[in-house]
Image (cartoon, rainbow, N blue to C red; front, side):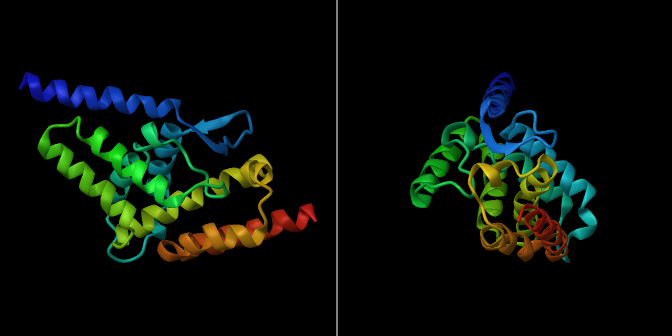
Length: 193
């Protein structure tokens, strides 16, 4: 029993490091950049509040688990902004290595269960994973709109780039959310023209 608890607490202590991983997205009040732990928490709240936007076959409890786990690998691999320049294959390799190490801190049964949830999110094949991925892509634009442009300004992003890199992914698991975002993004860029 003590060995199991030691492993569980070691994992939880390691997960605390996610609070130090800074993302490219600013908070809604534009006061600072969010960290990955805040992003994960906010996404779980998005899942609870926007559950009515989920399609058939989506298990919101599983979505919440995916969203709280999805960025743990950033403890080792860091955050790679969607509009940043990086080697996708290298990042995927770093994230797999991070998943091995971080989930490997857990007792075998928990390691296997939580790693499987993370892998399902990454694969984005199930309805739950597709909805979770959509929320992960939907939240940053909502913050960028609220903060006056945020990372779009930092990366000199165009409306077309948002549609291609973000909108296409949101539309897979939450088409109504993409329509909502697209209309607001269009107004944002029109007002800046």
